[in-house]
Image (cartoon, rainbow, N blue to C red; front, side):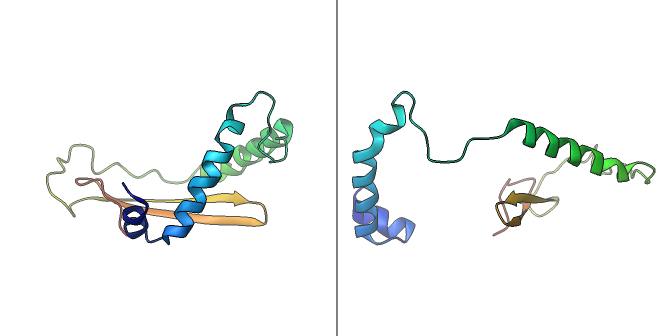
Length: 113
């Protein structure tokens, strides 16, 4: 695929793609060097484990609530738009959270855009 084809397919300017290609060629070997760092701060495993523990304790509110039956257990999903699934995730960021939501058609396995 040429740079012009990539630029039109992914809606980027051809100069931007050429710049990325040049950067990749100049720095590709750095990825495999021993002892190289990515520039990101080191991960504090104890802090992450504590955060996971806090999240596990925070899920205790689910106890005592009514559990509804799974109504789709024996349903044969045979056509598009028959069954949709929805997932919402809150991802921690450096200065708060970001909400990631996805709706997926079970039959076509395509996401709602």
